[in-house]
Structure formats: C-alpha cells, structure tokens
Image (cartoon, rainbow, N blue to C red; front, side):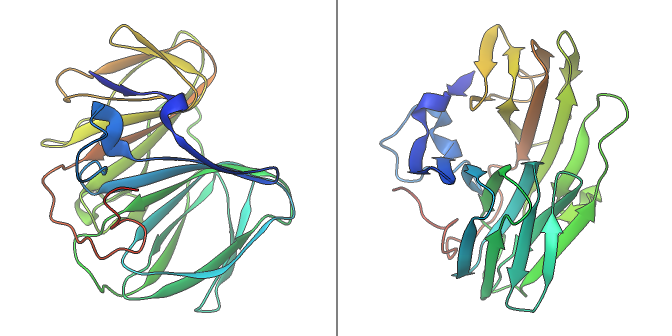
Length: 247
C-alpha cells in the first residue's frame, strides 16, 4: 500500500491563486527515478483561485487536460472562439492535440479544482474541448466522469484512464470500481477516510493493486477522486506539461 501525503506536494503561488501540484508516480516513495508519472497519469494540480483572477491565454501541445471542478465555476475561453463556464455539474476535458490555446477566469466567485494532465496515447491528435452535464447522484454513489471510448464515460479521454468521484457522509463505506488490468490511484479532495487501516486527509493519496485496495470508509463529509490507470498503456511524451518526466 503506497501513500502520498499532502505535505509532499509541491507548492506554488499564493493569495488569489495558490497551487499544489503532485506527480502521481512519487506515491511509491522513489523520488530518484527517471519518470515521476503514474503511467500516463502525469500531474495533478490542486488549485484554489480567488474571484476576479484571470490566467491569460497560453498554449498546450499534446496534453489531455481534465478540469475537475469541485467548488465554484470557471470561465473557459479558447482559440476556437468557445466561451463557456465549467462547474461541478458541467465538467470539462481539453485535448490539446497538435496545438491549443486557452485562458481561464473566475468572474463570479472563488474556485477549488483539480487540473489533471494526462499523456495521450498518440501525439498530434485533433484539438478538442468537451463539456459534460453531470448532476450529482441523489444518493452517495460513484460518478463516472471520464474514460476511454469503451467505457462510455461522459467525457472521452484519449488514454486508458478511467476517472470517478464520490461524495459521501461519515460512516459510509464504498467499494472501489474495478477495470481489469487497471491500477487504482485515489485522491482525497476533501474530508477524511480510512483505507486499508490507514487514515487519509484532504490532499492525501493512496494506491495499491486492485486486489488489495478494495474499500474505503468515510470519517467526515468527503469527496474522493479515483483514477483507474493502465500502467502499461501506450503514451506519448510530447506533451508540453504531461510529457515532463521530472522537475
């Protein structure tokens, strides 16, 4: 069982824009290895953005970028002319492909979110932006957010990663979804859980085999983001952010 604690994250910024970024592959504790990604799951940025912040137009190349919105709404604008809000019930996935420019702003309020950088299976794909209206389940249950075409997720990733979230109450127990051949990497977005006898708090992550990491128990009101990752998936290292092996 591998754990990456919140205090092991890298920090950047402050005030109206604070960022903690994690390299998921460091969950095994080996900071000396060549590549700090977890298969094609390259980097996870946990961002807190104050109202009125604007991140100016910038380019991405060969990154799949999932914007997981937990609180608030963010205005997306891009080089295709699209201008649209993303929110916890309208999640967004950007496929940069051979070149893509976008900017983000928070005109209506503050935001807390994850920006997730994934290595696509191939380089120089067609750029695209996807939005999906996905209401929260009426009862506590896993919500499928993104995945490859074969899982029919609301947002189609061009990589072998499946993303779920769950929002639950103290005392609730959840069995993790399973995809054959995929390895779980679980992130505590907020709250507290017990997993395999370990206590995890906001910003902590845990990973193991699907056979070992099977259930979690919530100790507080909690939001979990779960990544199921094919560690042997084909991928390109041509991504401007996702392709970086280590800092």
